[in-house]
Amino acid sequence: GVAACMIHVYWTLKGRELAVARHSFRHQLRNNRPEAERNAERRARHALSKKIAKQGMLYVGALFLTYIWSIIIHVLKPATGKTPFTLLLLAQIFIPLQGFFNFAIYIRPYALNIKTSDPNCSCLRAIILAIISKCDERTSGRSSQVR
Image 1 (tube, rainbow, N blue to C red):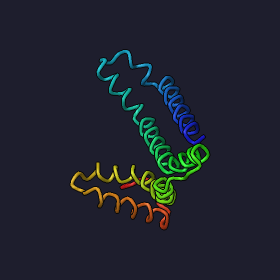
Image 2 (image 1 turned 45 degrees about the vertical axis):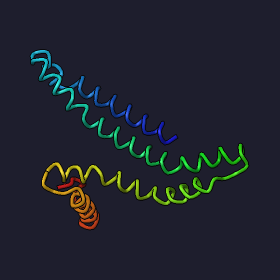
Image 3 (image 1 turned 30 degrees about the vertical axis):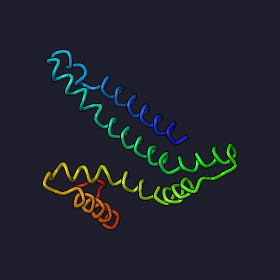
């Protein structure tokens, strides 16, 4: 269900990017430019859809990592009549962590943006700044662009 929705969002976005590219003025001028320049433009156009696909895959991966233990338990219990303690423990650890995983995935692009704009910034500092900037946006009503 969730993976199918993420794939649908990605393909819809990719289709719209291609449609916009076909109808743009630059598309009409493309044949007059060198191949390397056209390839660079093509890569830049698809950068956003790649980022969105990666975010979607991270969310699906977090969901899978969270619930795989419960799925294994539900498959093994009827087959063997036992519920392995290790799997129960893993399920009890990972299910509450789903919120943390989702938060980490949500804040990731903002932290990467901060890290890119300031290469000397540590990963931990970039994460803290991303969290603080998101909190500031909520309270002040600023735009969603991370500085």
